[in-house]
Length: 388
Ligand SMILES: Cc1cc2nc3c(=O)[nH]c(=O)nc-3n(C[C@H](O)[C@H](O)[C@H](O)COP(=O)(O)OP(=O)(O)OC[C@H]3O[C@@H](n4cnc5c(N)ncnc54)[C@H](O)[C@@H]3O)c2cc1C
Image (cartoon, rainbow, N blue to C red):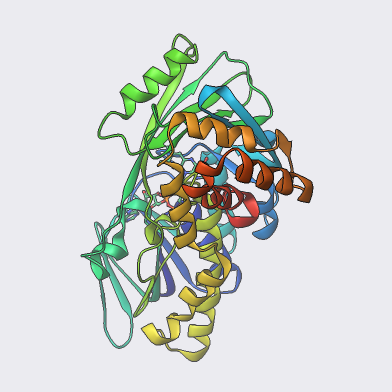
């Protein structure tokens, strides 16, 4: 059977693409190399309430473990500030399975335990050779995550930088209704650590950073320092995340790249679920237009890149802000933390004036080193800028 759309990968991006396309009446097939959707888990599992709104999804009890009210950001010297915005800690395995069920209910076919191996296209169709045969479709959405099916085929020389993530599920600890993100370069060089509260006194505790193979050691040291090392651990998982921004090109003849496969992660805190699903939505919109015209050429699919560039924050600015953040010493990071309002939803004009005056009069060195770029990065790590 020939399909309209073949989706490669059944993560949040792929499942949501399959759901959106099938609900528009397209004949969709999704190929996932694992035998079960959602596993192995490689995620801290938090997603903002705004993401649900934007994606027209209902947060349901079957996959919500906890409601959270925002993020506590912790800088060296235990300097803290709190940003308020509502969101959820998911049971992400159940969430992804829920998305897959939505897609199947709309008629999408799922082929699990089947790995996409190669791609070719002729005048009529795209052909994806798989471990179990082949799939023929008018167009392919590559949602294969960091394994980068499309990048390997179309952009073999692309330089993608990956950060390493590692996480424990830890039980029997005190948690609050806020995510805790620690910017402590000593334990998470060029990255950060988190305590994400789950239900019943458990939490995901992890890091994502450039660790030179020392992720486990660094996370262990953090847990010892925060008196978490002796708590029971029920699960360990990890993975890579693209950390250099979107790849140079995300549209090709008969193929679009979405989610991690396109390099879409939030530059500061590396969240990628919101971006994966929104890029799925945009890709499906472009696929629908291509179907109408019966034209799946690179030229027609190019609109996808214009759309996400318009929708997503400017990665150049954000990556610059991230670089600047990690050029500060612990002592400077502590002072940056002290400049921030302690608890805010939006930073008021009065706070902005206070910070500006403080920078000009006492913290001029921070200003010269580019602290404004860092503030910009923080602002863009909020949900409305696809931070989570
Ligand atoms: C430790 C860690 C913690 C994280 N925490 C968060 C968080 O709290 N919030 C957040 O928003 N983001 C978080 N992220 C990032 C988030 O997990 C990803 O950005 C998100 O899952 C990307 O979704 P995706 O659908 O693009 O790719 P993925 O979720 O990676 O899904 C890709 C799928 O494709 C399949 N696949 C790959 N190659 C093939 C192939 N050749 N054939 C068939 N199937 C294939 C894979 O098996 C996988 O199921 C975290 C990442 C890590 C590593």
